[in-house]
Amino acid sequence: MGKRWVMEMSPQEARRFKLRRHNSRPKTRLDNLPEDVIQKILSRLPLKEVVQISTLSSGWRHVWRYHPDLIFSVEKLFDGKDKEDQEFVTSVNDILKDHYCTAVNKFKVNYGLSEEHGDDLDGWLSFAVLSKAKNVVLDLRPPPKCPDDVYNFPLHLFDDRNSSCVLSLRLVLVCLRPALNFCGFANLRSLKLHRVYVSKGLHCMLPHCAVLEWLSLTDCFMPSFTMSEPLDHLQYACIQNCSLQSMELHAPNLTVFNYSEQDVPIVLGKFHKLTKAKIEVLSDSDNLDYTFSHLVRAMSNVEEISLRIHIQNEARQFMTDSRCDFINLRHLSIEVLVDGDPGCSSGILRLASLLELTPSLEVFNLHQLFSLVALPGSGSRAPVRVVEKAMQGVDSQYGQDGRQGCDAKNKKDFKV
Image (cartoon, rainbow, N blue to C red; front, side, top):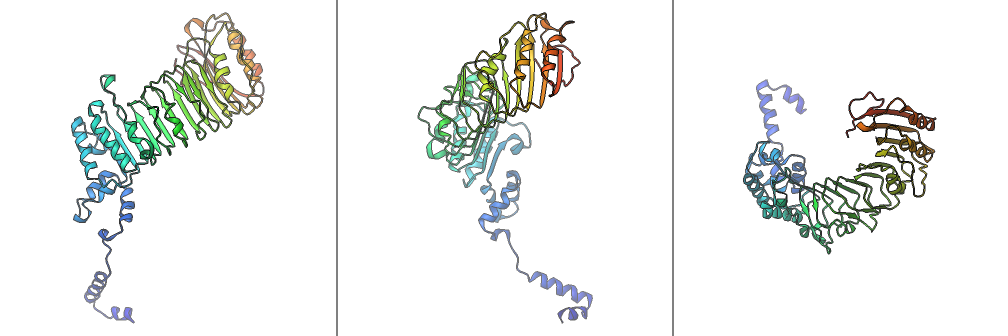
C-alpha cells in the first residue's frame, strides 16, 4: 500500500519523501563505537595515517594513542627525508609521551643512534616493557664512527617478570652484556642478533629462554657460544661469522642448522630431528676431516645438506674418528676449493669414500674451484672419474672451474 501511494505522488514529492525517510534512520557515529572496536580498526592502519585521521574530528583527536604498532624510522616519520638526530629523538619522545601505553604488538626503532643518546633509548625501551610489547626491534644502523660509542643494551629492564610479554627480540648494532644472574625472557620464541657485541657470551641468558624456537647470530662479536644445557624447543639455529673461539650446542629438536665459522673446538649434541643443514668452515687448510668428524657426524638423520669445504690435494686420510652413515640423506651439495700440488689427486679422491656413507642419496651436486696454484692440467680428470664412478645411480651435476673464469656445468654464484 505504501509503495502504491509513493507511485501516485509527483516526482518532486517522491524525492522529498525518500529524503525524509533517509534522514530519519538512526546514525552510527564513529565516536560512539566501543573502544575495542576502534582499536581493531586502527590496528589495520599505519601510525602515520591514524595520526592524520585524528585531525578530522575533535572526538578522534586522541585515537592514534591506542595504535598497537609503533615503528619509528626516517621512512615512517619523515617520508624518507634526512633529519638531524635530535629531531628524530624529539619526534619519538613526543609520540611516546602522548601514547596511552596500552598493549603494544610491535615496537621498532630503526635509526643510527649511539651511546650518546643512551638515556633516550633507555626510556624508549622502558616504554616497550611497560606497554607489554610482544615484538621488539632495535636497529641502530648505520654504525657510529667510533666502536666505543655503540649503545649498551639495558638487559636489566627486561629482567624477570618485566619481559614475560616479549615473544621476539631483534637487535642490530648494540653491545650486550648479560649478567650472571639474568633471568628474563621466559616466553621469548625468537632471538635475532646482527652485528652485536656480546662481551661474555650468551650462556647466562639463553638457559632462561625456555621456549626459544628461533636463534640467529650473524656477524656478531663474541668470544664463544657455549650452551651445555639443552635448548629443548629450538628448531632453527643460524650462527655465521661471529669470530667464535669455541662452540657448544645441544638442541635435540633442531630441524634447520646454518653454520659458518672457523675450525674451532666444537661440541654438538645429536640433532635427531634435523632435516636441513648448511655448513661452511672458514679456514685456509684442509678441513674435510674436521667438517665430518666435528660437525656433520651430529646430523646422522639429516635429509638435505650443503657443504662448503677446503681440500688439500696432498691430504690422504678421511674421517680419522668413527664413521657415521647418513641413512636419510637425499640431497647433498658440495662446493669445494681444491688447493695444493696439481699433480696430486689423493685429496679430492676422498669424496668417493663419502658417497659410501649415503645409501639413500638421490641428488648430488659437486662444484669444484681450484686455486691459481692448483689449476688442473691435462690429467686432472682422473680423480673426477673416480668420483663419477662412485656416483652411479645418483642424479648428479658436476662443475669444475678455476678462480678466474670458467665454463662449468651447474655453475653457482660462489665467490672465493
